[in-house]
Amino acid sequence: MLVARDTASVAKRLVPAMPRSSGWLSALLVTAIGAVLRLWNLGQPHAVIFDETYYPKDALGLLRFGVEQATVADSDKILLASDGNWQTLDIFTGAPAFIVHPPLGKWIIGLGEMALGATPTGWRIGVAIVGIIAVLLTARIARRLTRSNLVGFLAGLFVALDGMHIVMSRTGLLDIMLGFFVLIAFGCLLLDRDHVRTRLAALINTEGLQATATAWGPKLGLRPWRWAAAFALGLGCSVKWSGIWFALAFIAMSLVWDISARRVIGVEQPWRATLFRTLPITALVTGVIIVATYLMSWTGWFISDDGYDRTWAGGSGIAAALSSLWHYHSEMWSFHVGLTTEHAYASNPWGWLLQARPTSFYWNNVTDGTQGCPTENCAAEVLALGNPVIWWTGILAIIYLLWRRLGKRDWRAAAVLVGIAAGWLPWMLYLDRTIFTFYTVVFMPFIAIALAMAGAALLGPDTASVTRRRRGLIALGVLVGAVIVVAWWLYPVWTGELLPYNQWQQRMWLPSWV
Image (cartoon, rainbow, N blue to C red; front, top):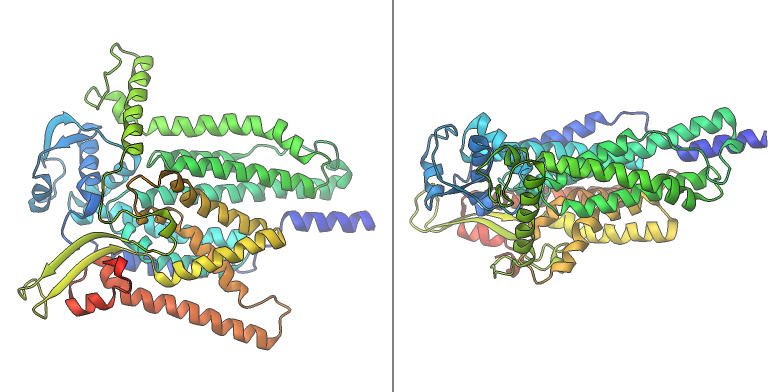
């Protein structure tokens, strides 16, 4: 009976039970909220805002020629004045364009332009859909991570109501798409973790602990979800190179999970088993998948003769093409590391969590009572600013998760911290580079999950007294209420709504927001 009881305990530890309710209703609810906030009046402002001067045009070039093309000087005006017909719209010089980010994100923007035209709505709709799905993914991932419907609901709600995520979901830029594929990769690795542990639990239930408590333990079997994660990470790198940091961090995290699983089932040498049995094949297979996926995103460049540097190496064949692509990438790398041009909205990563210096994407000051301005002086702005309640309390949530990891050895806290660290800490290496606060949108869902975990902890354990849980519920209600109220208050400056100037000023809480 002792062996049977130990076996059952180990199996339960390997695969904790999921909640009875599926949690889909709450996940779909927060997704619907996120959809309304991201799609409402999506075509406004009717302008080319911030770096939309690059990516929607690159997307048009991809649609028309398979590669990005240089554009004429007044291409922004031509775009805004056109009927949006992407097949006839001519803004190109005929020369190849030097671009500094891989093509995949621009292909997604291009799909929106195919569907709705080369208009602000058209080049934003693909990004908006990605942002909406990210809300759903966050809710479902947080639920699986914590086995809590409440945490899943809160995490999804926080993403749905975050200004940074809303602005980046309503703008034809690339960062929200990198964050999207990062989320998919993280979710796939969670499924891989559950898949492996379910298999181990079934093994010890049928053969007993003696079957696993050996020097290296049993093989962990095929890892389709890990391969899927590698594919998603390859897609992320095909949007922006900063996806590489997530690839390194997530695969390392997954290997640590393998070590932990082996320890639970009594493997005598879990580190050695992972380093010599799992690491080599993982590095090989995931590396091949990521690189192959990345190269696939350059298909248009490979099959065209018009891409930038396409014939740099001379000759023909795959070797010459790869040599040319390598040279192209060296030029892209030189651009990125050498980008030190002063910009009014450049920000230091140390201030990102505080949202100390958000980026203004669009500004329009109306002083003649036109354009629907109800007073003599109005302002419209699109400010890439996170919901301050989420980000400022999110700092406390990070501290809480650090305590959970260090004091309680909570692997879930560590996983969320890895997601935050992979998106934030690498930028500390480039403090002299021109970088912006809106890069935080990539790891914003992990901030939301951290805050959801901390918020749910306010309720206390199931064994807590009624008074303790009532007080915790009040505190959680205040937090959620504050997030909702602030989202309502700041939504006009997230979406470029024309406001009387004094009302715009009331929303600029910090001097550094202006």
